[in-house]
Image (cartoon, rainbow, N blue to C red; front, side):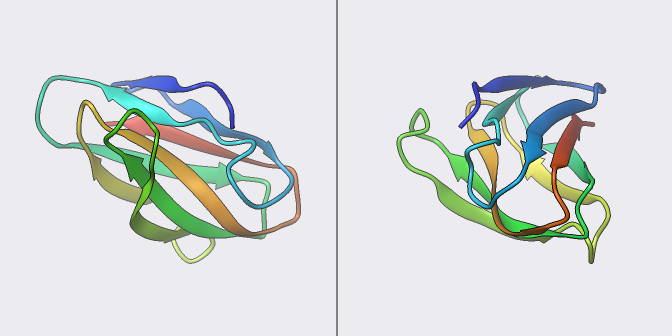
Length: 108
């Protein structure tokens, strides 16, 4: 797993770098840098013809992860979900072809 990233408002940030296999090894956990309240995180990918899995959330300092939602970047080119300050998020990729692939996120 890559080092954690603070996701600022309005700047596209790479949260998955040169993915060549499933899992979380090349994915950075990220949290949001924003005032309290829900905020939308918009995500996209570059490079894969199949990339899907789960968006996961941790509220205990990344000791445990729970599934927030499933994602499929081919069926949905951009994926949006609510994020809250204080929680960490990550992508757990379960299917991937045509590598390497990158995942980007932006907080709106």
